[in-house]
Every structure is written in structure tokens, then in C-alpha cells.
Length: 286
Image (cartoon, helix red, strand yellow):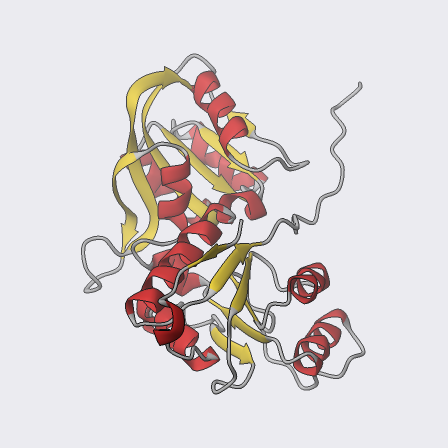
């Protein structure tokens, strides 16, 4: 949904650099993991911006959507060039995306692990979508403030069964072919929930100590099996894309608010293109 704010004829000229500054104030690059590649991937900081598209992944379908919407900038969660490269020739998918962006004057910015760790950030948006309250970090970052860290722990307004909570998850998050996978007694009571947007099986031990259930993405067989064998909390595994998608609206609203406060105006839109890589799911028939 498009949203705009502004002050008529007195509205300030907004540039790519203004948008970058606003986003980096909310998601400081210093919070990113040392292996990450966040920030402006391409684009002229002095170029004007009036329409921005927010998406999880910087893939060709998202670029096509930006072109159809007349957007001058794309903000994604995942970086386009996460690993070092020696060429950006249009001979592979990433090179073609980059050439398409540059040829049409579209800037690309990513906020990845800095948005994961910031408050509010990716896991806050996921937790709030699920109706959790009294949010606190699952794993804090020393010296970064009490609200900053990886994942979030929060409380439901009242206890429900694991089965009921899983059904709630399936109704709240965007549909994917991955669906919602559950490990644990369906009738176990759930009140305190730990979540982590994206791949979160590195934090199983923290979740076991903090919550009645842990919801994240990309749970691997052996880690999940070992966690349950040690009487860890039940697990809910969702699609990586679905776990991070709620952040897009949070980030777009925050940006509009910041730009408007400074006297400018931009129109933002959350991508309707599902970039989850899985295209079908077949239940076991044997």
C-alpha cells in the first residue's frame, strides 16, 4: 500500500543520501556483523527520490516491480553482494540485477544484520505481528543497550496450546509453500515465545532457557533433534522470507516518519512479490 507524507510547496528536496542517513540512524551500520555487507550498493547520493520500494530480496522480480512502480530506490533486507566479487558483469543473475539498477538510475540499499539487531528491528516486527508484548532481546549485545540484540522474547496475552499458537502463526504470516512446521507436544501450554527473524538455530540454547516455544527459520535436522533430546522447548519452523517480511512495513513507516519530520516527503511501498525460493509443497503420500 502506498503511503505519502509531506508539506505541500514547502516540502524539502529528498535525495538518496537523505534516505541513507535516515535508515542508518535507525539501523546503525556498527550493529552489523563483521561478515555482513550493508548500506548503499549502488546509486548516486545526490539523486532525487520520491518513490521507494521495500523488499526482502534484491532479485530481478523486485527490480521489475520497482520499474513498474516508478521507484527511484529499493530498500532490501538481504544484500545483493554479500560476498566479495571480482566482477559485476551482466553474465550472472547478480550482475544483471546491478546493471539493470544502474541503467535505470535506481539506487539499492540494504539493512541486514544491523536491522536484525536494532530496536525496533526485524524480530520486533515479527514478534509484534504475532501479538507478543513486553519484548526483550533473546541474546543481547554487550554495551549496545538493553533493547538491542538478536531475536526477541515476548508474552502472549493468555496461554494457548502449541497447536493453537501454530495455527495463529499460519494465519498471521504471509503464505508460503514451506508452511509452518512444529516440533513438540501439540497440547503443551505456550505463553512466553522466543522469535528470531531469519536463520536462528544458533540461539536454541538461549531460547530453551527463555521461552515456552521458539519460532524461527531454517532449523536444521541435527540441531533441532539435539535440542529436543535435551528437553528444550518446542520449535516452530517457518519460511525465511516470511519471518522477515513483517519488517518491511515497520521500516517503511519509520522512514516516512523520519523524512516527514525533516520537512521532506517520500512515497513508500512494500513489495507484493513473494521472493521465497520454494514454489511447491507436497505432503508425504507413503
